[in-house]
Image (cartoon, rainbow, N blue to C red; front, top):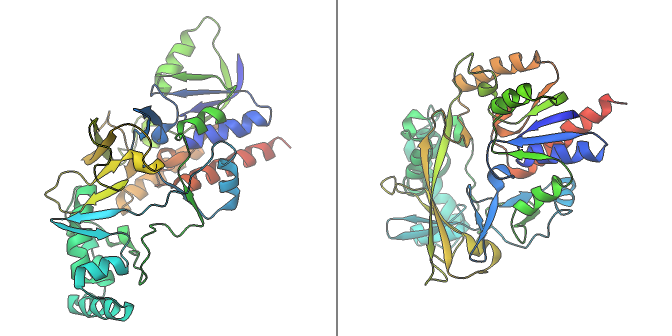
Length: 375
């Protein structure tokens, strides 16, 4: 079989690109090293509950083009992300808002909160932040930093805040209103019935091979009696892995998920997302999946998320976009530009953290650019 595109990875980027090229009359074949489609947005029904198997994903966007696009494939509910943070025996609303400040300082008005934060910022004495701790102190003061930023961030990145670059938190969302909506985007929700259905519809009528890596597929295809041929390849895996780490390894952070089903409990924590901000607590958050769809299902399913250092063979979740890694990535980009008929997309192929709406927009843009080449 001759294909126009071999698409490596069935996450959002690969699936959207494949759908658009298929719609334009191109022949596509998708492969994925996992045994399920959907990449990190894969959801699976357990006990009547849609479980986010690779971490919580809340869809939010201000891009109407993307919102209209994704609503072709699922009906979205009106879920609003309003996480809660636990620090010791204290409970706080996120993002940082008047509910947070009222609980922390026993105040009621925005003026009082602004005065306390301004005084703490001045007390920090930081004028030119040189690390993440100094950056946070200069933005929100010591109380919010110590209770809600420091421990969580150090767990997430596996390093002391003094060892992390300031640019990781160029800004921290601070609202002087009683509003617990984490996102300010116009459109927000969770697809009723989970995310997997979206990818299934995107890849409808497109052949997919699961449980095979790119290298394994190339080797197997080369040995076939009648090997398939491909005009172009879209690679959404790790760009450094594609080049066999020829220039060195890019750094990533990984995650470990610990899932628990409680048959005799219908509501464990009262919220979909609860963060644990003390460093001594080994996980960063507990997800109670049923709350994404307002209590559907029997019992409850919990997932604890444990950040981890990435090593070869682990799943890479977050690129470490510090100066050294971005310089190395730029060198890989130069090699990528020399690859004939190979496109690189997605958070791993482009070594950047993408929200879901940005993934879809980037995939649509790439598909549009490819179609224009045929005109």
